[in-house]
Length: 310
Image 1: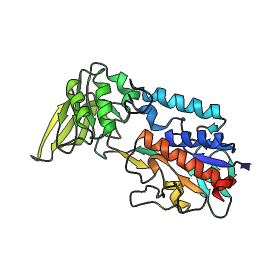
Image 2 (image 1 turned 45 degrees about the horizontal axis):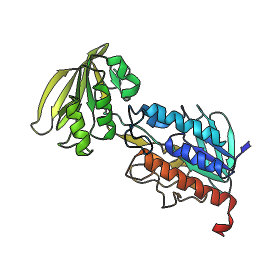
Image 3 (image 1 turned 180 degrees about the horizontal axis):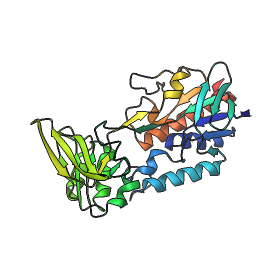
Image 4 (image 1 turned 180 degrees about the vertical axis):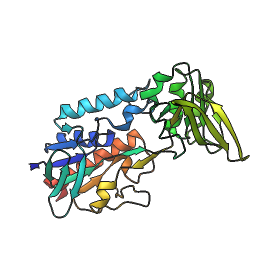
C-alpha cells in the first residue's frame, strides 16, 4: 500500500491544476490518469479564449504546458493507470487501480467526460475508417476531401474551422436552427466557407470499407437525403466519467454529473470533485482550472487544518 496526502483521479486541466496547487502547498500529491495526461483539451484543434494566449494556442500545446508545469511543482503523474474501485468509508480513503493500492485522507475526482455517440447505423462499423470524434487527431487524413461535422456547440464549431483548412469541403449539421455559440463564431464559420445544415440529423452512415456517404433527415420538413462525404466528425457532447465514484457512494445528478458545493466538496467528507465531471453547466477550460484550484485548497485545508481554518 502506498500512502499519499492527496490523490487526484484524472489529469485534464482540472486535475492538473489541482495537482499544481496541491504540490505547492507542500502536501504529497499523486495524480492518477487512465490514459495520457492532458485530457480532452489535447484534442481541441485551437483554443482562442484561454487567458494569456491572445493569438490562441493549439489544444495539444496547452495540454503539454499544463502537464510540464504540474510535474515541475513536484506532483507525481501516473499515466495509463485506471482506478477500478474506491472505498471512501472512514477518514482514510482507499483507492485501488489497475496497478496498485493507495490510501489517502483527501481525494479529488477530476475524471472528465467521454465523447457521446450518435447511436446510428454505421457509426461503430466505420470508426477509424471515416468516423472520428477528434478533428485534430484525424483531420490530416482528410486533406482535400469532403467531411461532415455533427454538433452545435463550441467543439463542433472549432473543429469545423480547423477542418476548413484541410478538407476540400466542410459541412456542419446541427439538429436545431441556431448554434450554441456566439455570433462571432458563426460569422467565422461563414468566412471559412463552412456550409451549415440546419434542423439536420444523421440517420445512417454508409460506405464500403470506408465512409462514402451519409443519410440526413430534415426534422422540419421530414425529408431525407443522401450526400457524399469521406469523413464524419461527431461532436455532440460528452458523458461524465462517474461510474466508479457512483458505486462508492458519491452523489450524482440525473445525468451522472457529480454534485458539489461552492467549495467543490462532494457529499463525502474529504472528497472533492472538479472539472467536466461535475454538475457545472459551463464546460470550459477556464472553469475547470478554477474548480481545480478551489478543490485543491479545500483538500489542503482538510489534510493540514491550517491556522486560518481553525
